[in-house]
Image (cartoon, one colour):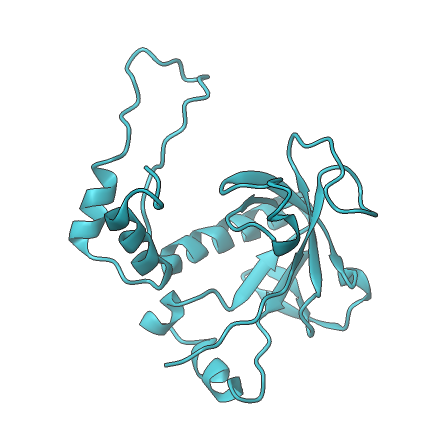
Length: 204
């Protein structure tokens, strides 16, 4: 199922990104889930989605798993906040701690750690012409620029774990793509890409 070839699917995905979803839309998506063949072994590489969720639920699941891994493995956990400009500062402060539907719009905090697995869902601009990544490409966070351990930060306690809150958004997040042995960005190792911070406009 490809959004470029299915207008109804593309529209549902667009609504999901902003936290707007109806029961009919979820039922339509779930009706397209491929059933696991009864002959498949448990070790098969056959994958299928388990649930279709809004941004709010997905971010909650990601946060839970990130905190669990860092607690179990004793890994440093970093909190990276979106950075408001002067025009959006009041809006930003209003919604960053909100618990209502406003929080379904976009994630305003990124919780991450070195070694965290990710899925590339958009092509970084500098790699668009190389066709090096596609939707669903797997990778691992290997660092930040400036380095997180050198950046200005504060320590905050959250859910029985100490979180390092970076006071400035990193300019770049470095990601090592899985199963990629060629140099994608000059000056970096094989399979390493740089994901820059993006700018967006908030409105209510």
